[in-house]
Image (cartoon, rainbow, N blue to C red; front, side, top):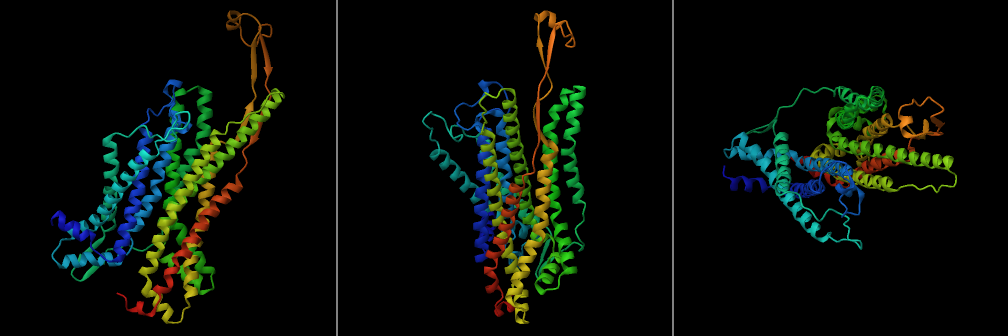
Length: 512
């Protein structure tokens, strides 16, 4: 099969395929922008703290100016690609039944199974390549338009540097490669014959709870930070300090992975409980759907939970910094009541940017969930139309879809909030200032160096007052994050139900 033929077959299809290609182009463009922005920040200079001569003084934002803060910016930009790729994954699955029948027709024309899968991968890969190139074009245009220094000659964005050419090419090329590979993996269990499409399904069983072990391992790594710090300070093992970052990153990854892998179990368990105690038709339908396919809605819900997990951690850090500022102010007033108390707003402004990133992630994830919900309604339109024909009101079907989305989301969001705040609680549970003894030399420096601090004739020891406060649980911020996530789920269902009426017309019973 020639590349031109492969391209023509990959771009052929119905209106649903056109919508899928357009959505894939959009999601790939957003992913390309995030990757190129991360490379742009990386191109500023070394990612290490150092002397003042290592600071990038041409930027007005300290997140870009200080080398030690740039890794956080890069990680945030990379994390924003997760909901984008989740959106792309749902776009790949849009119209799956009709898409599976197309390779069957290609097989009837004499193609091999490998060629049929190659057509499906080319469809996604070409759309992703177009989106990645579009993202590159938007990046280059934005790079030129946003290169405007302020009155002091400082830049708000790193528009004075470009990433290396090989990084740009690799970033743009990686997006269609990953998208095509994902499409091939989705089709790996599809065997096409002249009689149609046959799927080799796994044995049906409820999701295992082993994902909880992964979550427990992530929490354990965070919990080990406190004892490790005390052990390091007691034995003065300085090289262990360098391992703190690895503990934090490994714990965060394992915790997020545990949340993601546990969504299927949460969906199945909530469906089982709902089926046991529910008495209304809508809730019974929702319970059976959750038990029959717990992974259907949990795929995109998992990405939403990662955003909630990250947002809960940011909320705790905000409470931590606010408590640190309060403790510092009280200590300054205690030491010198005439001293003017000042608070640096830099860290709070940084947290505002992280909150904005969380909201962007939730919005992107909501788009992916909307695509998944609409595809689910369109895929089951024959079953829904049959239920309506037997006398089931459309309102009952609408409520069942709402229950199916909201019931597993409520406990999952609560767990994500608890884990995100709990992880940061293991790192910092209280803020303190002052404390300890302040030693003042009463004689010459040479005499003090040769005399222990316990000698009152040489050393004056003054006890410093200490201010200590427990970091309060940020209930308001946690409730706001959880409420936004749950409101996003409800809004997605409300928008998706627009397609329910047209999908339950009696003519849909004859749909093949």
